[in-house]
Amino acid sequence: MSELLTVNAVTKAFGRKVVLENIHLHLEPGRIYGLLGPNGSGKTTLIKLINGLLAPTTGEIYVDGSGIGPRSKSLISYLPDKLYFAEWMTTNNLIDYYSDFYEDFDKERAYNMLMNLNINPDEKLKVLSKGTKEKVQLILVMSRRAKLYVLDEPIGGVDPASRDYILDTILSNYDENASILISTHLITDIERILDEVIFLQNGRTVLSAAVDDIRANEGKSVDELFREVFRCY
Amino acid sequence: MLLKLMKHEMKSLWHYCGLVIICVLIASAIFEIGVVGVVAIKNSVVDIIMIPSLIFLGFAIVAVLAYGIQFGVAFRFYRTMSSDEGYLTHTLPVNTSQHILSKLLSACIYTICSVIYLIIFIVLTVIVLAGVTGGFDHFPDIMRELKVAYDEFKSVVNIPIALFIAEYTIMSLVSVVYSILIMYVSVALGQLISTHKFVWSVVFYMIITSVIGIITQIATMIFTAIPGLFAPFMAAGENATPELFMGATHVIILIVTVLMAVVGLVAFFVTKYIYERKLNLE
Image (tube, rainbow over all chains, first blue to last red; front, side, top):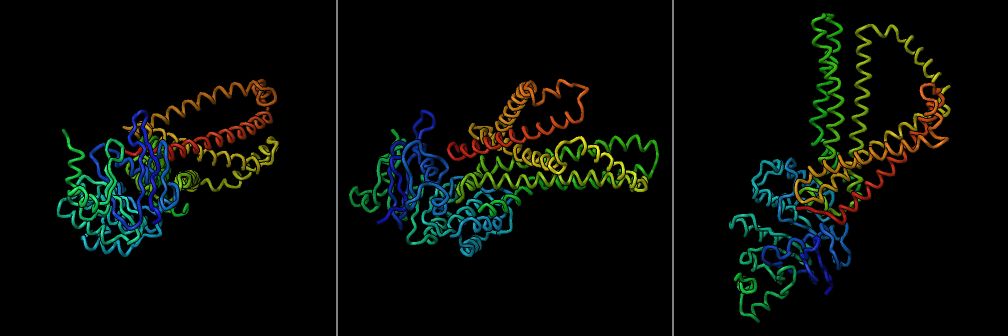
């Protein structure tokens, strides 16, 4: 099967500090990947590299055969782990913005999701709660028919009741041939949707395996394995 | 894609500069009404209060518009390129050059419009003053005086007058682009520091403009010593003829334009390099 994302021997250092070391990743279409690891393991740095927000010190990254650039950015729908929209904008402004720049943006899908969550698209972001702003971000990201969704802590800031809705939103809004790369600490919440997991520790890949294989070979859930691998002594 | 970027940039710049523009428009209206009032009332007590107030207001209009737009342009660039909003900017499917170019062109449009507005404001003030003081009766005389001045200027300037105006206009346009690019490169350098990025951007701006100022002083000293350029003009001192003066001005315009274009280009490519290779979003 053709690779959607190839991370080839990527190392990222900030000055003398090496944050990622010799990372290899090969993501195939139509799968959901969990990027898991403790704080400071390099998850967000790797995601920033994939999205062109950082340049690797060494190594290469390809998205659907293209190096990082305008084409790769048109294929990736990225949700950062922070609020990044201008507060003076309304959701309507943002929908216009997204539909102008992303050919794969589906306005109808966005408005349907906003309606389901009772979010008024005419309201400015500054009057919305933090949780609602996060939902608006997720709606905009999931309203694209992208090839790869890269979601950095999509459920980190929301209450447990909203997590299921968000995960359902993610699952029901991505195309069969698209892939999702999710980074999170909340493994129990997302384990049910994952096909594969990648464990990062101190900037290195310590495990890359299918969830079914982990269950069959280790006799453990991903959460149990995570706790074992990253146990704090 | 550049036009789409510009469309959103123009709208967003209004958010940053709109308040300044509205305030300036209101202040301009108050100024013009004040000018009419002072001339109409002809009261010495009113004059003592109003004339200094109007002079202050006039300067405030010019300063607020000029600096307000510049600050709005710089802050907008910082917010979209170096703060959290950069996550949206830098993941759009466009390259860094297009980002910088779209912001630069939009900022130029705002700056040029503000300059045009100030010219209109001054002309309007002159017309209002002429209207209320009966100055229009002297209009033919003024036109005659202007014609004499124009003919004198034409006889002094060795180059065609249209070319001189074109050179001056090009220098002004290059200077607008240059000043914006200096702000952009300062913001780009400021984002390399992990904390207080905007403060650091201001510090870098002050450093860059000071360094350019010092280099310009040194270059001027060197150039004035070169025979054939400004040396005859400098040697003539107070007795310099208008021909010498205009000749020197002509050369200065060309040199300044070229230097600003070169420094502007360097600033553009440094900004591009920093955002492509050294992006430092939190």
